[in-house]
Length: 540
Ligand SMILES: *Cc1c(COP(=O)(O)O)cnc(C)c1O
Image (cartoon, rainbow, N blue to C red):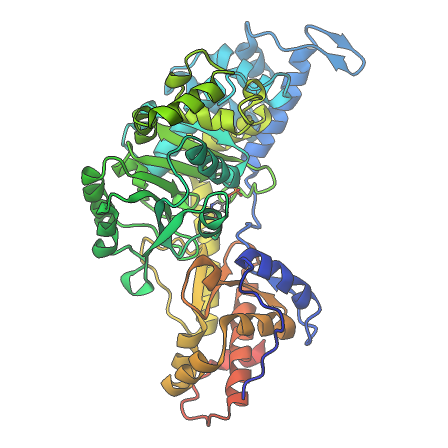
């Protein structure tokens, strides 16, 4: 019989919480092996250029501020008139960071039609943090920069930047929370409403709708590995049911890690033609890890709210940098107009404390107001310094005109780690262009089948839980991964993040998975009929 090592019941806990528990076990693992945490998606790289530019502009801004008040450690605020010229004079022609700043200003004046003084003043003030965010939803020049970044990366050549409004937030996490809260507050999602969720998916999208204050009825639209993680036409056609109010998806997916291809996007476009009232929330955090990525926002701009985060690409999880993008012409504003009179009345009451035309307040501005309980709308909005860093990261891409070496390097890093892991496990690489390679989903049962044959695979399916395998991997081998099941993936799948260990450690992760599998095989009493164990695992 196989031994069960876990006594706790993990059924109610989320994948991230279980993984946090595993960390303690892994750090004190039985073999004294190096602790390897490939559970979370936090990258172990950072973007230096955006951060360096931030520091330089901070220094410049402090010098500028001394022009108005200058006494010991007190200074005033920068003067707009002539500030761009003074900045150029301040910059060193030999310094790559300084030249990036110079090029960025040129880009904004030429490509985005900005006045240099206005732009520099906004950026410098934002970095100094000398004022509340005004306008509160997003600083005006920064909104244009973020908008162009989004278009160039997630909906190329669509021309949508000019028609898109942006609300920068404290990370994709806050974007998700704010969207759910405002959909609820504005009566666009009510208790008992049906929402479709493309699973497997980042756990909060499963957990939040189930919370008692939302109490939504989730309906799964599945992506299957057999179908290259696409959503099939039949699944997408379920959205034709008018009782489904909203559709949530992560694209490219997490943990499936694949982007929707053109065919799948065209099915969604077809459905949306029939379902003009469908609300779609797409989380495109991993979009830049796929060449030629296309967001659902591109094919259904009227219906789609887009969530993005700078956390993963720029290695900035601690900064909390995310945003919500929405089309100027959108279903949310139109559905608000059609609400029952009773609901309209309460909303008029709520928003009338911040505007004298509450009926006309757009959904994106309502999200911003709701994020500060409406009453604090005048001090709402993301910290200006955070907005500025997002703009600088965006500019580091925009000035490359489509050929950004930083994007290439981040893709190469995760691709190398992905290959090392798969090679160690004896699994083929999936080099399809939709594969981000940010995460791998390893199915322990099918892996067992490949190595020890189908009878043993069947035996494991009947006798071993996925969480038991993961617990042993932590306790005995010091490796922490994430359970795919919490994401709505198949039982027995483990998510490996390719973002947070050094390249060579991914081989170790693979060998250690194989070692635990071998232990299970030995304990099971099966004879070695088809022993195809990768020889390399012995060298770990
Ligand atoms: C990591 C992640 C986020 C969280 O982004 P933050 O900006 O760090 O809050 C959101 N959505 C998905 C799908 C993610 O994987």
